[in-house]
Image (tube, rainbow, N blue to C red; front, side, top):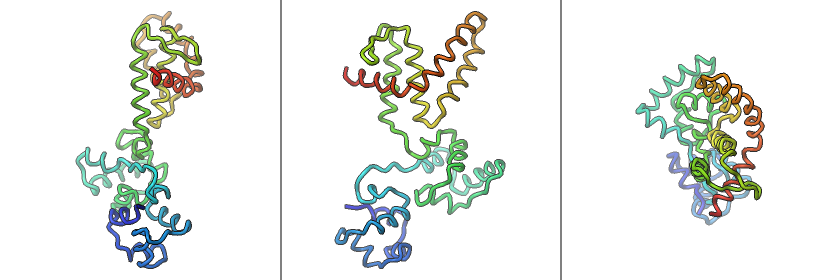
Length: 242
């Protein structure tokens, strides 16, 4: 069964209102919802554009993950009007156009979507990544990466990369590769994140000789970031076969 009726009712609109928006009849909408008539591709596209969802999801296939706006706003314990007032202060400070409560409400209900620049400001406000805020993160993959990171923390763990045995000397490189993928999954630039952590690591070292040692490895670590996906997926394959 398609999800036309479900999405229409979630947005609290009648069949007549939906028909007007799509330039069709209420009877057609009723037939689409019951499955007695199959919409043409043009109508499917209009419906998908109207509800701001992929066509396969609208047809009853695929998995659709709503954004986290309402969830994060509820955690802050503020109403939509209180949030909009606070968020508009941030937008104005960035010389961006403020929003209205109805506009934000449509974002929460996935009727409309913010621009990428506004997504970035929303993520900054809630202190999360854009990917998480949009509901795009593959939590199953993230869980596997965390497990893999835990696994390599144990000494004398034998893993293989392209059929090559990896000993404990590879541990820092493996950790960088895995955390790079986690950073990307969370919507961050892995090179920028690495630079931030590297700068902090330098501050924590007192011995100048150790600082030189760390600086010697920096170039290798940065080069490793370009191969992190390949390395991590190969390690995951080994881990999944255990």
